[in-house]
Image (cartoon, rainbow over all chains, first blue to last red; front, side, top):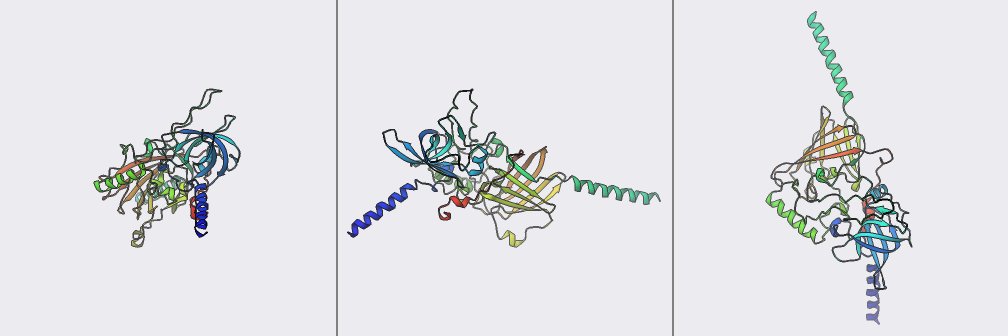
Amino acid sequence: MKLRTIVSLVVVLSVIAMTRVGVGAHHSNVAFAVETVLEAKGVVKEWQWTNPHTWLIMVVDDGKGGKAEWAMEGRAPGVLTRAGWSPKVLKPGDQITVHYSPSKDGSKVGMIARVTFPDGRILPNAPPGD
Amino acid sequence: MSSKISVLVIATLGAISALISAQTLPDFSGVYRPINAFGPAGGGGGRAGAPQPAARPAPGQPLPPPTRTAPLSDGSRGRAADAPQLTPEYMAKWQAISKARIAGDTSSDNTARCLPPGMPAMMNMAYGMEVMQTKDKITFFSELNDALRRVYLDGRKPTQKVLDDPTYAGYSTGHWEGDTLVVDTVALRDNSYIEGFSPHSDQMTVRERIRFVENGILEDRITVNDPKALLKPWETVKRYRRAAPGDDQLREFACAEGIEHAK
């Protein structure tokens, strides 16, 4: 009984840890292969408008009929505002395509190059002229 | 009589000259955006260029995929030709940091941990700069990490107490040489970087010559001295463009909100 309680606790804690998906663990370009850019299609779960970096939590089709949760790191709110973003620019349920650089450690964390909506609108990661 | 007139003329000319120079001191106040913050003109330090700007597609054509997300900043391509020339001791430190960064270790990234960028790296001003100027003090604010430095213009000098208490921005005093503000910075912590992640010692000092090179373009010519870390003084030039109306506000950075303990 006691062992079962401990096992349950470990499972619960692991699930909590996994839902964080590495958010807060990066905040540095160094964690990403910045010269590789991949594409992910999925649905917005959460859009966190925070410094030093923003976070886009999204559910991505894994290509095998399953789904996986990814944390995509964006630049700071200040620079993204100048690039056309806002706290409300992404909403849960939005269908999006994200170009991103993968994490060097292979986790489901990426750094955003840009976000594209189904109607072709693009959110770039730099203001025009920067 | 004529000598009295001469004295009067000289005194008058002196007064007029003093008045003109006081009136013509440039006013750097305002918001600026960096010109090529991470490119070749932005100094070396191991960075490899800015993110690629999005190309403009032909009407009706989709944009090509981006080729990168950020400047390469782990040193995996070695050091830029214009990077600070480090002594063997400090080059070994740089190589150790680079090895860790290539492996994805972010612990060397001070600003990502919400520490100030420190001088002189602070003057990259990647997200924008606001300058506030009075007769006795000029203040430089960086949107990146809400970093701030003050340059005292009232003739005060760093005391021993100041020298014994190093900070990231250091202690800056300045004076005008014509239209150029000359600034000396001392009392700098040794856990920041000169540029990129080039390390320095606690003996680093910085001299800057700041002036308008053309209307609305501010230039900062920076010379870094460090007898322990540098083989020779390192020079770099930063330029900033006065922000256009509608793009002339900086945003709060509040870095700590993204750190776990602040939530």
